[in-house]
Image 1 (spheres, rainbow, N blue to C red):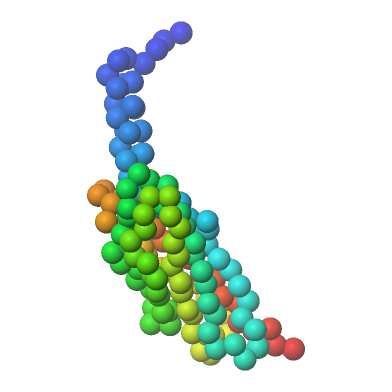
Image 2 (image 1 turned 90 degrees about the horizontal axis):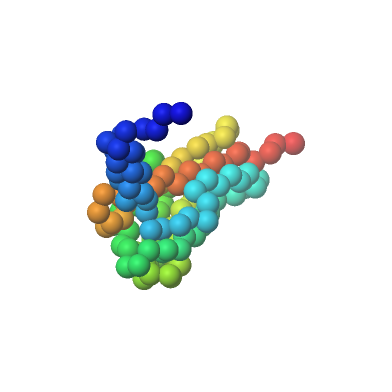
Length: 128
């Protein structure tokens, strides 16, 4: 049985540490939500809750919707360690006749962190 060389083992450890360092301190309850709009409903609201599991406060520096049909709000952009927060999204249904998939990209002040993408899918009202 062969064992990896010390250099290879060290490289694997470093790559794992690099991946772990990019993980966000914000633990999202869910990052994808799907709903069906009700007949006559003009706006569908979404709530994306999260908890700061890190040891320091985290600030959401931007939360950008993928289209003008989204209104995005971050009620409390800075979240203390252990605290909970929310990203609220309102989707304007308009004349949508098919399932709409939109997204919100959330960027924090954590160094080296990858942005989080929140996805919302809205089915048009059932016609009968």
